[in-house]
Each structure stands twice: as structure tokens, then as C-alpha cells.
Amino acid sequence: MSPPTDPAQMTAEQLLALYATRTLSPVEALKAVLERVARYNPWVNAFAVMNPHALRQAGESEARWAAGRPMGMLDGVPCTVKDLLNIAGFPTRRGSLTTDATPATENAPAVMGLLAEGAVIIGKTTTTEFGWKTPSDCPLHGVTRNPWNPQRSAGGSSSGAGAAGAACFGPLHIGTDAGGSVRIPASYCGLVGVKPSYGRIPQWPHGAFSSVACAGPMTRSVGDAALMMSAMARFDLRDPVSLPDDPRDWRQGMEQGVAGLRVAVVRRLGFEPPLDEEGEAALQVAAKLLAEQGAIVEEADPQLPDTRAIFSRVWGVAIARIWNGATEEKRAQLDAGIEDVAHRMGDMSAADFLGADMLRVECGHAMARFHQRYDLILTAATPTAAFDADAPTIKPVEALWRDWAPWTFAFNLTRQPAIAVPIGLDEAGMPRGVQVAAALYRDDLAFRAARALERAASLPLANPAETGQMRAKLN
Image 1: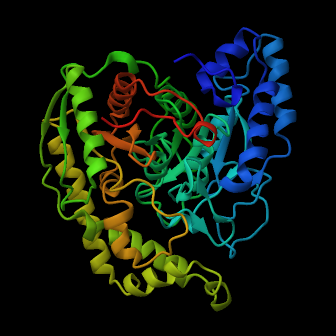
Image 2 (image 1 turned 120 degrees about the vertical axis):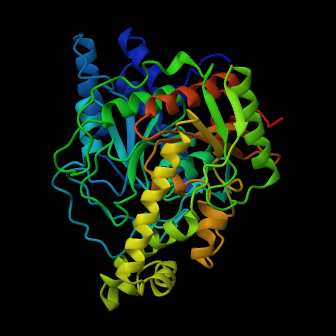
Image 3 (image 1 turned 135 degrees about the vertical axis):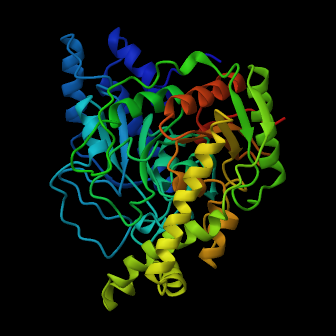
């Protein structure tokens, strides 16, 4: 497939190559993106707020390129930031009517990383309220819709990031992931979504789900995701769990492939997560593609404890804290599902919670043992394609492990890296993805596997809002 001619549909790597040859300017690229936002965002609803200074900042980048002194590895590349992270001068509303509209005074660590490398932030993207669920609606901004089909959900909680990526509102998008909130919308929207090793990308302030949450890239290519992580994954002393600085370009080694690597196709994560027929087809296609590239692929079970019981406690206690910390007046403004979960999970004893945390540690140990035999894990990413965007949230505790995140939350418990990779379209023309995971701190292997799948599948980049076709149909 020939490279796109519309700058809005280009990857960050393609934009940077054109900036370097003066074939394209950051201002021209940003204007192309903003034209798409004006055309499609009225129904996609991906943005919480736009950055009124973006064109000026793109102009400053253009001047640096013209002088032969680009600021960093992302100079002039448009990006977005999920509205759970702080950007100085903008409010952080977290999708909630209950939050303060006072602007933040400093940037979140991941935002600092992108800005230090010259990225141009075009706006903040929508999130489900406090990032608590997968359906892509929130009380503050309403429903964010999937560019592939406006009747379908964009997923969550990084709803706007997923929709913005699919609609080509820039190539780079920051999401956050406490149980699948990067990987689920990435899968629903046909993107690459990275949940890095815990602590790899620092966060501050920590949110309600801080013990399992990570910030991560959401992009239309694996190369862009690795490039973006290179800017974001820098030590920040504000975050007490931030990993030591390891400056690197995460694209290095990405093309080494998977020949000789042992890959476990995992169908049990302490329970049997549901998976529909077309999700099974996507998983089989991915396993075949890895095997054809020389990986040793076989089915295996990591023998985890029941991750439903563990994650529902971690998740439930965090949501109960949100509810218990709100006044009666503010409780009336919260998403009704938050009250439901808080009432069901909020009376958990300290002993129950500590017991769940010990089981989380056991999950990590079991996975570490499993990775002594296997370099990589391959699973489904979601049980179905994107569901109805306007469907009410019913029985959220059950929906968590049945409909929303049964394939993703285990890797938040184990804190290991996991990447969602698009594989194809189902019969309804909606994207389907799979998930590759590597041992804790082996993000490099996860990128290698993700790139191998992307390369083998030969998935073209295009625009579903115009063409309705971005990925080849599943075989």
C-alpha cells in the first residue's frame, strides 16, 4: 500500500522524516489534523478540551526545523493527552461533574516527557469518570463514539484516545491502563495500545487505581508506540515507584522478530475468560503468523489463582474510595454505576483487601515462573468487538470480568508489559485485536512480538471515518 498523502493520516515516523527534508512543516501537519477534528469530532466526541496555543507551538517547531535544530525526537508531532493526566494551564476534570475546573500548575511526568521532545499537544481526550469502566460515556462529556461505527463504543477508560487515534486526530495519544483501559479501546478502534511494565512510565499524581495503573501509548503503528514510549519512560522523582532512568529508543531491536522465541497461547487466567467466534479467529490468525515467523507456539496454562476475585477487590475498593470521598451533593452527580460498585464492594475488611493483595503477588510469582519456560504470552484482547455505545451500564461487577476486561486485568495484577495489536476486521467491519505480553521489565520482547504481528499481517493505515476499511478481513 502506498504511503498516505494526507499528513493527518501519517505516522509520527513519517511526519518526522518529511520535516527533516523540509517536504512538510509541523504547521501544515497540525492544520491537516485540526481540519479532521473540525469535520469529525462533532460526532466522535473525542476531546475534553482543545489547546488554543497548538498552532503557535507548531510554528515554533517549524522555526526550529528550518534552523536545523529540532528540539527532540518528536519535534512538531501532534499528540493528545487523556484527561486523567495534568497539563499545566488546563483543568483535569477526569470526566466528572464533581471535579474542580481550576487549571493544573504542573505537567504530569508523561506529558513532560513528550513536551521535552518537542511534541505539540492539541488537546485533552475524554475518559470515563475517574477511569472506572469500559463503556465510553461519562457524566461530563457524554458518549465518545467509535469512528468505525458511531453506534459502537470507543471503549474505555481511554475513550477519547482510542477514538482520536482511529479518526486520525494526530498520530500519538496518551492513555492510562488500570485493568485494560489502553488495550481495550485500542482493540475496539484498531490501534496499538501499550501497557508498559509497572513504573516504566512514571505518574503523578497517582489516581484511585494507582497500585495497578500505568500510562501508555496509543498509536496507529508499533513503531510510533515505541517512539512515544522512548519519550515518556523517563525517571521522575515525584513518583515513588518510578523505575530508574534507562534512556533508550524502544524501537531498537524491534525488528529482530520472534524466530526461536517460545510463545504460549493462554486461554485461562485463573478462570476461562469468554471469547466469541470472531475473537477466536483473530487469536488463531495471530498464533499462525507468529509460528510462520519461526516462533515456537503452543497452548499452555500459567496456573494463576482466580484473577476475577483479586481484581474485583482492588477495583472495588478504589471505586468505593471515590464514592465515600464525595459529599451527598456530589454523589448525586456521579455515574450511577459507581454507587452500585461502592455499595457492593465498599464494606470489604482490611483483612480481605490485604488477602487480595497477597494473591496479586502470587499472580506475579506464577507468571514469573511461567516466563522461565515461555518468552511471550499470546491471548485475546477483548471478549467481543466494540459493543453498543448507548447501552446502559448494568451489573458492572459482573460486566468487568464477563464483557469488559476479562483478558486484560490479569496483566495489571502481575505488572508485566502487554500490548494490544490489531489483527483484522470482523464480519460487521469492526476491528479485532490480540494481546502479547512479556515478563516483567521485558518490554523489548513485547515490542518485538507486536511488530512481528504487524509486519506479518501487513495491516494498512487508513481512515475508517471516510473509507470504512482499515484492516483486512479476518480469514
